Image (cartoon, rainbow, N blue to C red; front, side):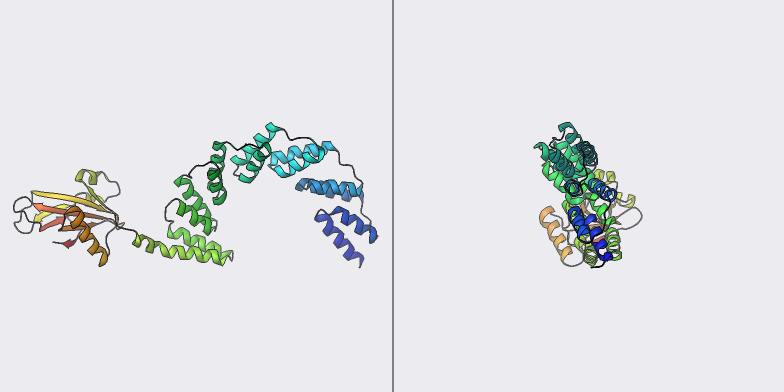
Length: 343
């Protein structure tokens, strides 16, 4: 083996924390390793949190590793939230970790959305984390788009994640190209994401060559309309007063009402009823369903349907007070904004 290959292998061992192997190889290959170079590697191991490798390396190199140095690194690890490294160092030097420091560090981890580090801290204390700290951690995780960590935090707290936090998390996931957790967040919130957001997510995934996630986002965006169409129509009877108080209703439809009786031309006295539809029926089976439902559930056979811009509907039904006819036209302001399904 050439000297160049020996040096390459030694460096590979040192970079991986295998100092004993590196030193043995240097002896066999007659390649000198300076104490200063080995010291630098030991410090690098400690910076990386590789406490055991640093201790083993120092023994192999004959370099003293004072306890004071390890204590300083324990404090550094605790400040950085590196529980495993702090615990390993304390075990090696035989000094227990300070309880107060662990609690502070655990709380700090939770507030930064570092669920696993926070749980590890409380595990050392053999205690369960406070519910409020878990909820705080879950909120931060959701805000940062860490859906699964946020969900786990709320699960450990035995609480249900708030709908708004799930939506925030889903949006963050979609904006960073995380299709699967984004869809799961919206599903848990029982909401449907916007098509545009899903398309953006799909494009991000395509740019990053994550084709499965891209396909999932684009397919989901195509299904949005289908999902909306498949959603059952909801019917709610309301009064004119309730209609006028609804902010989402167009002003022109707030005056939606009977125009005149088409049999006796009465235009003033009617007995009327109004119904809100979550969406207008499609022609065919849905119209037939609506006819049947209005008749069987509400006793209404003759009605008109006003259409909103968002495809919601307003049913109007009236009986002429003069002649008792159901053959009554409906108007909305100056515009006849309706579809007459039955007369």
